[in-house]
Image (cartoon, rainbow, N blue to C red):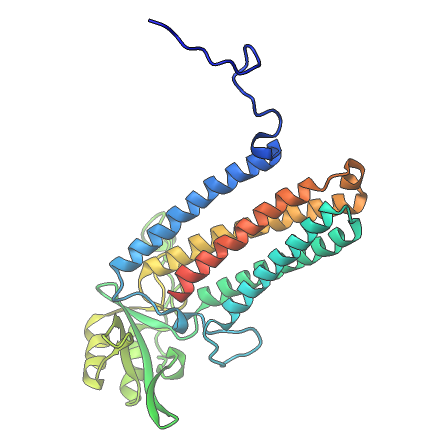
Length: 334
């Protein structure tokens, strides 16, 4: 029995990649390893979102009806406009990062400084926009009633738009009949059950909503179930009153990790988790970019005759940008 020995030319050594395997420095390789592992993490999150949405496909909120706000334009229906603006800003910041990396290859300190600064501004605008979107999502706009079975009932009326009747959402505050003689207080541990506090009470009770609904004959209830036309199911006047009276449990305003006025509770859970996780990545990228930016100003990389650090942080920034494209597509568009 013979053994074949391969002569590598360097006796006693098994690694021949030197200090730059695959023509990449150690730092670049480690950044690529991180990007691949993080990409798998985001893939898992988006896959979980996809499976959950498919399971509740007939009751999943319609993004065009949820993300309709635009800063300083109150009452204007602008579906997905602000999310599209956020996406544009992040893509443009990726472009400025490309220009910064290219300027670094030419050892042009001035241009690297300018493009890095623009990239940081773009990242800050995106993070700030996402914070505003979260705030709007949490506060809500219309309110809804949760049934005993956990479903969400919304309110609206038919209005004529260009000769066609369309269902328009109506906020609970616009028709509710508030009972000013009935005092409601939060349950506190001192009032009976130790170590148990009730959450913040909603602004209105189901009875007040019911009274308001009875007083406004034009207001109807819309369920979270999507019909064959791809729209939420609108109940008749009699069915609307019956649903609130027999099944109404709790008035819901905005969204949290337990319930939301938009539909399935999982929708808000995934929204907070996925966009929050991505937002954390963007915020971390902005901090790193700021550090690199000051190093550029101080001439650290000019002395090294290499702007490779700008290129490495650029890889991370492009990854964050690419992930948002997938999040935007899967969460907002599909």
